[in-house]
Amino acid sequence: MLPISRPRRLSLVLSFALGLTPCIPALLSPGTAQEPRPAAADVDALIRRLGSDDFQEREEATRLLSGKDEAGPALRRLLKSRDAEVVRRASAILEVLAHRETKRAFEKVREWVKNGDLDLAFERFARRPNWEDEVEGWQVMAEMAGALLAREHKEFRKLNPGTFSTLEGVSDLLFIRDFRRFVRDEQPLLTRDSTLLPVKHGGRFLVRGGDLRLAGRLAAFRCLFVSSGRVQLDRDFDDSVIFATGSVMVRNLSNSVVVCGGNFVSTESILNCLIVAGGDVKVNSRTWQSRLISVGRVYMKPDNLINSVAQEKEAMPLGFVHFFEPSRVGISVEPEVSGVRVCEVAAGKAFGRAGLCVGDVVTELDGQRVDSPNSFRRALRARVAEGGEAVFEVRRGERTTQITVPVTD
Image 1: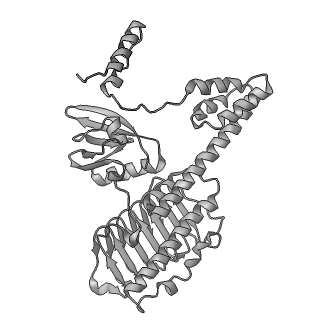
Image 2: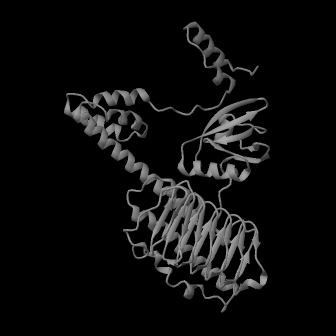
Image 3: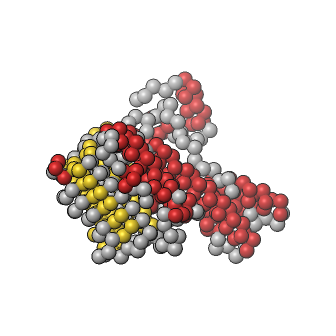
């Protein structure tokens, strides 16, 4: 039994004397601070005041509720009220809350881009249902590509003076700094899973949580892709940008930028391109005046590199790009039959506080089957990008249980 200090003993005595039930978990974890819970009673009281006969009281309740993010669920229930005034006020408050949440999410995307957490930025941008200002949101993606090109050009020129013409070769792509000239606003966003569609020139393409395949006989150019899955382009692309959390497969690619969290494969050749891959890079034919950077391995014949550089096993491509790893949020896993085994849990972080232990076998995360460290990493990255709570299905000995963990980056 854990020792109990004299003040705690006095508190226990008073609790029993007054007929109160002591909090056993708190006693078993002395010194552990309990996270504050939303004041539900306070929200309920303010909700009731929205229907008050006193105008000033309704105004005060509206103002206070507009500052409480936790009031969202209760306010959404009010939308079914028969009181038109209550419905109007609830709708107005929900708009304020949504605007503030969107602003926070957008600021997080910008922060990740600035810090080089590009796959997290793609994940959040793609998975979000919508952005209040779609053009501004896409502008961030375009600015990121411009920054990658500028840094790549500066560093690569130092390595190969006079032999690399990226700046000239992708001059048509550099105007992505002004997104409004990069794509036509009338191009639709693609949000369907497992999409197989033709591509028009100058489009922006968004895929949330699925894979994208684009096919056609003609070449396409000036396209910007952001995907939270895999991208397969069965045609030739020029002056384009591809950001994907999964793998990317292309045919011929020229004057373009690709950053992907998985493998990159070119079935034919690439020209004047910057490729950064969180997995392996494979080019079946020749690579002209390009730079290939891989966290994994590069598979191609050395003779096929023409005025190009291939770098493999780069932990931080371009000196600032890094791909998400579970260890950054306090957990590490290793392969295990029918799941992944937890091999490290950081003390004091959310996973340990929630009850995950070294030796636990995770079989599902948020309803998705986990069968390898890579699938675990992808599922956890999606949860970190979206925020909220992750639900782990855990096998511990002969027992299977669910553990919910609030996840933040």
